[in-house]
Length: 629
Image (tube, rainbow, N blue to C red; front, side, top):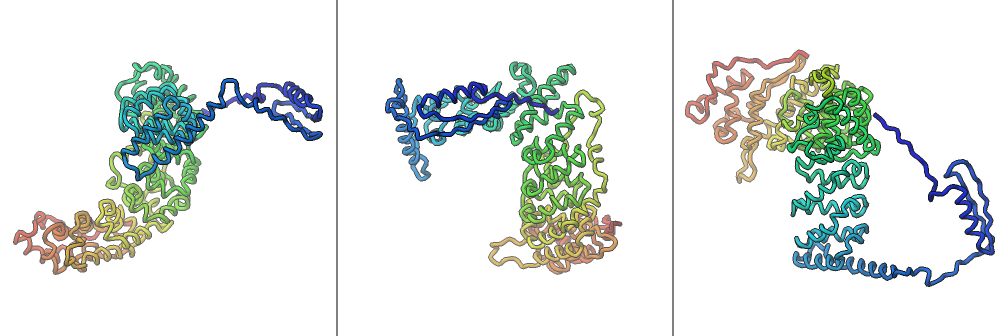
């Protein structure tokens, strides 16, 4: 898949060594104090060294007329310099934040009047490019349309300049906010140049920004330039509704699919070699490539991007798909490269909307838990508070505690994990591969792996300590309630009971102690039993059976809460959100607690203050469950 590029060396100035020797000799022999030249010629255009020895002082005579051009270009330079100086003074006033909106519009109009017809002479300057960006922000609609009319024909040249490409980005943003027709024209001007611009270090940012502002049809038109020249030239060949490349080629012959694949390979390889991998349009093209590539070609691509390059891609939906695919299908060596590349970035990736999904895949598949603890889990522990309180970072801990549940990850967020497959349209055997075969990449028992990850870097202990310290905040929060529930429950199959049983008991007591606090007299602060999320989380913990290992003895959460808080106080909490906590004792898993609670709850049920949760005789006398570990 790698392409070899033949670099042809060209001599400087388009001349050979003999020509340069003649130029040197003719230049210095014209003066009476001739300079001696010592030359050493070696084979090759860049291996000629010239040593110059001056024999005496030589002063060049200054001719005041020599610097003046016949066409008066100096006068033009002076006038241009004077114009820029005047514009800068106005710009310093325009950029003030405390200026009135009317003054903003007036000064922007004055600047545009001064540079009218000379915009293209100004855009390649650092300061003048910023001046025009500010004017586009504050000028009127008619003046903005005039600027667009002047600059849009030169947009391709501007996009490749280090200074003026910022003005193009501002024009795209302003067009997206004010006038969609201007945006459509600017995006249309990029057609035919998408692949070339994405190889350019400056222009690639313009294409990416246009791609992000485009609608689904425009995005597809930009992406199809990677498929083949006829896709880019003849728009009728592309579906007017968004669809995948594999669907477009479904009815095409194998030769057509191969030609598209070869063209995509030749277009993508220079971009991969230059490392321009941050853009979402590149990620979309790579997913389209993997959807039609054969197994060997897909493996070559995944091998090439595994490592530090992949970390720059996993911040988008398509990039996360590619990341999950690299982890699932990569060899042990490639997975090691990815894990080492995450060193120093694990906490940042964990808090990313899509990067966290790649971390979940790594923790799910890689068997070398010592390496995971060294490069990833240690960093998660050092930033545990930041990650646990983040809406995306908490998914890492939820998945370790309870991988069978998707309550911490939405259905949309799970899509990259399920769709990260490279399937060849030509190989029927590959189409039979399912997600279950990807899971076979891991040989270690999932329960053992999770226990080693929670134990190795004291992650389980730190999670329990965090929940004890911030129990009230986590119980009352929409994001924290799931984490404290899984920790207090002990995780799926009681994995956390095996790691830190004493810590979980302390957490149960901490929650009960918060519930034992009396109501605030002024009702400024809502009691934990009366909070919406906290009341429902505590109810789940009361009903949930306790999964204790054989070598651990502990009281259930229902027993701790009943003895500490609710015993003799059910009447006080029988209304409002707290009613759900009280009625949960009718169906709690602990048999003894249920019998004690019913003596106090039955009068409340008979009076109609509490609802009867079914016939209690149908509730089996289930003892506290223990798991053989």
